Length: 298
Image 1 (cartoon, rainbow, N blue to C red):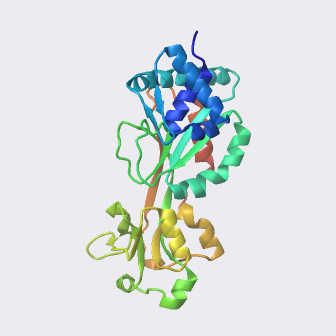
Image 2 (image 1 turned 120 degrees about the vertical axis):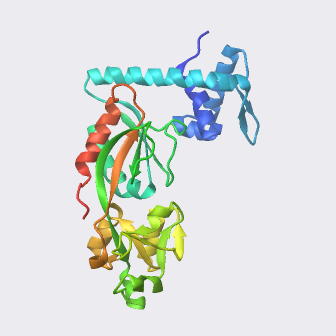
């Protein structure tokens, strides 16, 4: 008796999600249904793929060997589905997108509704990470990278760029005053990143160099966290335009030291692994994003 797609999906989903309950939610099934599918698969293969207890699920050696083939089969089926959809001029299949949380929240999420209307057969998975991820390890189709690219093994497509501004909330400036010179910055509470150090190089006019290295009084790993700290009046932050446009328009954040700022932009790229022709679902998403992302740094 041959295995079915349902059984392979159950197995891979349990491995990826870590539990029967999470896999059931992912597949839109009941935990008992997922468990039965796993049982049928193991019975057909005459081996145990997963050791299941009330607390955890561990793969057996046979399970690890079978997992790679199971993934390949499911991916081949997905590609076949996409190929047929292309013949109907309707890109389809699962599209896994990764981006830093600020870009995801302020740029990607606002266009998802329109994108889904245009491409209803594409199933989106949106994941955020403030660190650079391994696309293969995280099973990601396309990731948005901000700043200089380092991994030459990836294909990259320019999406746009974003300017940088020093910003603070009106409440903070009312309480502490606005800095009138670069030197006065050091008497203020500066908000910066935990890593990398390059993000704490602010593009300000200096006699000896083209940027100012700051030591944050409050540091965070995410630009979105720094944005909220600035909004709550905790200090001055250097943030990308794409994540602060609405705050600046509404007056929730105010630019400081405008005349002392050097023109500086962060490049934004979409990166992906594709040795052959770019898949239709990735291509249409990148086209859609690039058309709706402003190339200017307002």
